[in-house]
Amino acid sequence: MAFEIEEATIADMQAAFASGELTSRQLVLGYMNRIADHDKSGLLLNSVLAINPDALFIADAMDRERETSGPRGPLHGIPILLKDNVDTGDKMPTSAGSLALADSYAPEDAFIVKQLRAAGAVILGKANMTEFANMMTEGMPSGYSSRGGQVMNPYNISTPTGGSSAGSGVSVSANFCAAAVGTETSGSILNPSNLCSVVGIKPTVGLLSRTGILPLSNSQDTPGPMARTVTDAVLMLQAMAGYDDRDAAMGGGIGRQPADYTAFLDKEGLAGARIGIPRDYYFEELTEEQLAIFDRAVGIMKEMGATIVDPANIATARSIVYSTVLLNEFKASLNAYLAKLGPGAPMRTLKEIIAFNNEHQAETLQYGQKTLINAECHSSGTLTDVRYLRDRESDIRLCKEEGIDATMKEHRLDALLFPADFGSRLAARAGYPSVGVPAGYTKAGPPFGVCFTGRAYEEPTLIRLAYAFEQATKFRRPPSLKSFID
Image 1 (spheres, rainbow, N blue to C red):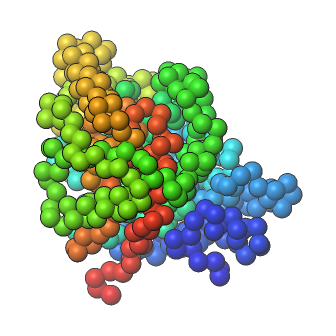
Image 2: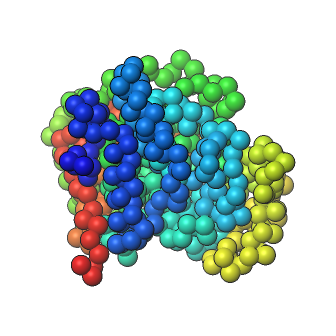
C-alpha cells in the first residue's frame, strides 16, 4: 500500500479514497498490520483489546457503496476504535476490561455507535481500558485491566498512559486507527489525551448520548472523541451527535447545539478571546519543565491576539474535596445497565461480579477489588444516602455555580486554561466541556498539553480556541515505536 498511514488525517484518507489510491479494506488491513507490529509485538503497547471480526466485511461494503452511490460523509470507510465500555450489538463483547464480563454481549449498539455506523465508519474493534473505569480498586495502575493487561505509553513505556481511556489514547497516538471513542467521568478522556499527545474532547454531559455505555456515574459520564487533530475530533463529535430520548441528560441541550461543529474550525479563533488562568491550586504539582511548556503556550496565545487574564483563580478550588457521588452512582448505574442485558447475561449485579472475582482471584485480583466492595457494601444503590445527597449538591455548587460560572462571569471569560488535565475534576463535577490539545514534550519523552474549559454547551468556543492554537503550533509528533533494544 503506497498510502502513508502514519499521521494521516481523515481528510487525507478521504482524498485517497476519492483518487482511487486507497480503499477502506486496504486501510483496515494497514491498521491491522500496525497493531500486529507494535501493539501485539515490538513495544507491546497492548492498547487494542479486540478486533471486530466483521471489520473487513464492513469495509468492503463501504467501498462498494462509495462506487455505486458515493460517500455518506467524512467518516465513510474510516476505521474507528471504541473503548471497551461502549456496546456493540455484534460479535464483540463489552467488558469494561473485566474478565467477569468477557462473555457479555450487548443486545444492540450504543446510540453513538449507531450514529457512527450511519455515518459510514468502520468499527475496527475495542480498545483496552482501566478496568471498570478505575472503579475496581485502589493502587491499580491506569490502563490495567484483568481482561486486557497493562496498556503502555508509546512515548516512554516507563511512564503512565493515563486513564481510563488509556487504550483509546494510545491506539490513536500510535496510529492504530483513524480516531477513537473514549469516555470520561473525571479525567478519563483528558488525562490519556494529555499523556499520549492527542486531542481529546470531553463534551458537556448530555451533549452525546450515554445509552448503551457501561456506566460509572449517571451525573458525570459522557463519551467523547479522541483523535490526532482537532479537525478529526470534531468530525467524530459531529457524527456522534444526535438526540436520544432514552438519555434524560440530553433534554437540557435542546436548541443549544449547532448544526455543524466544523464551522468553528477557525485559524484566527484566538484573536479577541478572553482566557483565564486559574493559577491557585492547579499549578502546585507542575515541574519547572512542565510550567515552561505551559507558559510558552500562553505566550503563543497572546501573540495570536488573546487577552490572558492571569490569574483568574477559582475561589472554591481548595474546597472541592472527596465526594461519595461516584461510589454511590456506580452501584446504581451498573446494576441498572446489567439488568437490561437480558436473562442470558453472565453477570446481573455488582454483587455477582465481586463473587466471580473472588472465585478467580489469580486472574482477576492482581490489585484487589476494594472499590467494588466499597460500592457494594457502603452505598444503598438507591441514591438516598445522606452523604451522597449532600455531596451531589456540594459538587454542583462548588464546581459549577461558585466555581467555573462565577470565575468566568467575574472576568468575562471565553474559557479557562489549565495545564494538562489538572482541571478535569472541576469540569467533570460541573458537567462542563473541555478540549485538550498537545503543547509539547518533556525531555524524558512524555507529552504535555493544555486544556480549554468552558460552560455547558460552549463546545463551539472551545473548538475555535483549540483549533487556532493547534494550527499555529502543530506541536504533536508521533511516537517512534522503537523499542530500547533496537
